[in-house]
Image (cartoon, rainbow, N blue to C red; front, side, top):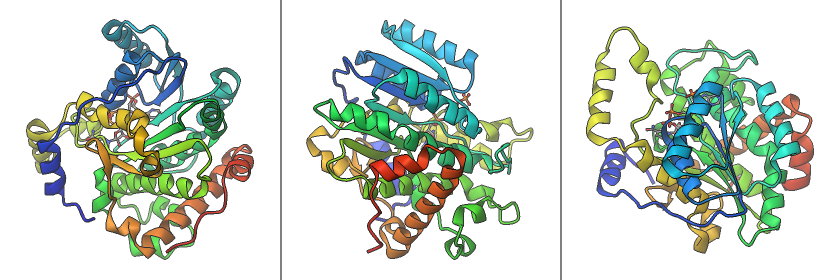
Length: 348
Ligand SMILES: NC(=O)c1ccc[n+]([C@@H]2O[C@H](COP(=O)([O-])OP(=O)(O)OC[C@H]3O[C@@H](n4cnc5c(N)ncnc54)[C@H](OP(=O)(O)O)[C@@H]3O)[C@@H](O)[C@H]2O)c1
């Protein structure tokens, strides 16, 4: 499928899917990037489903506490916990995973929602461009490190655990640079300051989210009680584009964006319904949910490029490089890949 921006907008404008709901008694839910926007609204929906534990993973303690108070006040649910994580710092992610290993228990639903949209090249202390690290590498790292807890929960439950990774329709509108496609280390190539294309960096990162879900699904045995799902919340008003508005002078692009947001954007609550669908919806079609792309309340076809031979080749190249990088970040990644995953299907 080749979806245009206009198509995406029209479809969103025509349909606002309802909120899926289920009973989450006895279950543990973890939402990463839960203090504001779509993640906060998704957390409120989860709270109304009464999980045993609802862990909000946020990078700011004060913002996290405010979110906790807001959820308690609006839903009367008091099982929320605030855990701190900064995806721009690998050590923070591995410390979080270690804490989860000791105190988290089984994990039924993981929602990797945190994301940034940066207009400038800003490296993290780990040496990666921030968007690449936050949106892709650290998101993949935590997702891999939590596979044992997700699988353990799925084994004891009547339904598979779910790993929801928040991607976007923007994956339809990115063409990878030739230097990236021909590189043996495409992530390193994307990361190089010389080749920086920050205007497309967010798009690339959301394509990487989709690749990760599909590559992981290729490597999870079908009997493993874990479904990885990519989701787009749709075009929503939130703080995602905060860096655009923080710029001193209003540009033509930011004025057009403000108009588009005012006229067409969903509220973060409407967007959060897609995350909820990814986490608890489609149970009657679990096979479609595995590696699926949820948009507007259903599983949708992804971009033609993702389905092409070249797309498969890039998906495997990004997977292999991601696992190599993350193996050097945490000595737990290699055993998890070894114990829980099988070699991926080759391109077809
Ligand atoms: N809004 C849209 O139109 C749209 C469309 C498609 C996809 N999405 C995706 O939806 C997800 C949520 O975005 P949103 O629109 O709700 O944006 P948002 O309002 O800016 O929320 C982003 C969340 O991610 C957190 N976060 C950012 N950097 C982090 C880090 N280093 N460590 C931990 N948490 C971090 C933020 O925490 P702080 O508040 O502390 O920064 C915040 O909780 C993102 O993955 C985004 O790419 C959004």
